[in-house]
Length: 445
Image (tube, rainbow, N blue to C red; front, side):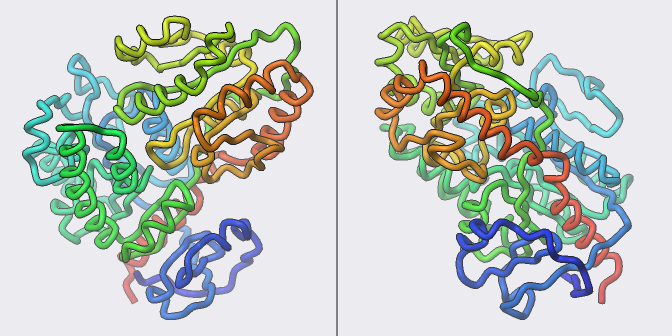
């Protein structure tokens, strides 16, 4: 890669708990907080990496236009893109319109090239050699747009925002370095979806899993660097022989940070979930959580699901007539202020749950599944309550709901723990990696 050791203050270290969880054979580059295989560096010791002052020209490829940022996927991406721009990088982006009615000029500024909305039937997606997530957005028009950007914009580096745009590797063909900005280990996510499926859907998921594994492995082994959203993803990616180093890029949260809040007797006895229902796994997770909350619902506790404008399936609405499904909410801050507990129970899927930050920074006490709070620095029993199965949700929340001191202790501890985290600085390590790779390419040793 062409990065070199130099003299740095490496005092800003990654928490030892995270480092201790990394598998053998991985070293930590303290200056960037980058994890790389020891073989890449020719050593098993920690080496800082040279910081380059020159900012890069980035070509950012997204499957779709990122606004409105109405789900964790879009929020993570748009916040990261904006953070890189604020750090001084020049960015041009390409993505598809998310709606058939969205015109190419609908992008909010001049950095975007917006391609037409694409909708193809599932059987056609399954007939392609690439995974479904890729065929949903990628075609010759997208490839042509990338070629035009390479010729007219002349980027120093290309960032693949999500696996969906990884087919652009064949267009770039090694002429420009690249970084895979992941939001999940997509192979692991697909594996987790299969056991709950039946019949034809299960067979289709299995076929797509094999495509996904080959495709994601190709990305990991070809890109010059990788950004991972969780330490769990770092470990599984590292085991798959990536070409370059991996940075841990936590979200850059730009929502409301409520300076203070006290839950009182007047606060509605309301339990909230946030679930944007645009993906089958999201629906599966919501149904599992609702099944665990059913005793609470039957006892009269109000449960509200904020769906981001995506309506629940009819059969779910019929099964849970007492649950309030809220689409677009005009005043989300006030909606969360009227809740006593927030639930994030999502065993299917991986990555970082952006909704946990909504609850933490709006000071809503958080109850999560034990895999749903990965990369959060919260302590179970002190700043978060965790369950291992959906059957534990109702009894735990019932014990909390009227314990105002406990609720306030939880929300205060979570907020104070995360107060100075999840800012634009979350993208600093990715920014430094971008700069280093671009500079090493321009000035090879």
